[in-house]
Length: 192
Image 1 (cartoon, rainbow, N blue to C red):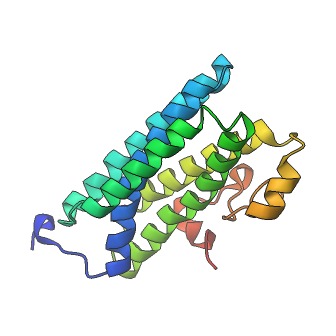
Image 2: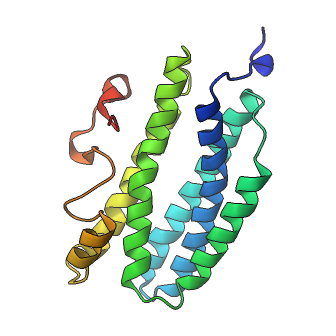
């Protein structure tokens, strides 16, 4: 059987890939608004790079989906298109702190989505995507760390962390970029 004929028999993995593909576009749209709304040129440049990373993740996820004949979900495309555009526009009116905070919170959760994909593929005996999914998860962690570093001394962070469960003390993943495990030992990440 050629790889073009492979169909994944894993509903949760298929759904996760479809959602990730569409959500990456929403994130990219959000970062377009975020970069446009900030005044600091260094912040603008960093956020634009993160936007490019998200477009690249979308392209890589689509490559995986195409390999297994997974269709793009029209529902997720429409839903996340609207979400991304709303978030993008809101960046111009909600101030400086909240776009940084909620971007970091979102990226924190996105980290584990790529590790979950890796685990699901591994449960099917497929390891060829391990490196790519690992790298995308690590890139999302870098994004989380960037956004947190921008707000870590802001007086609003403790309040937001208490209510929204993410910040300098809480994360949605257990990755420490200073002590990364290699791909082969990354099964320790994002296990609940």
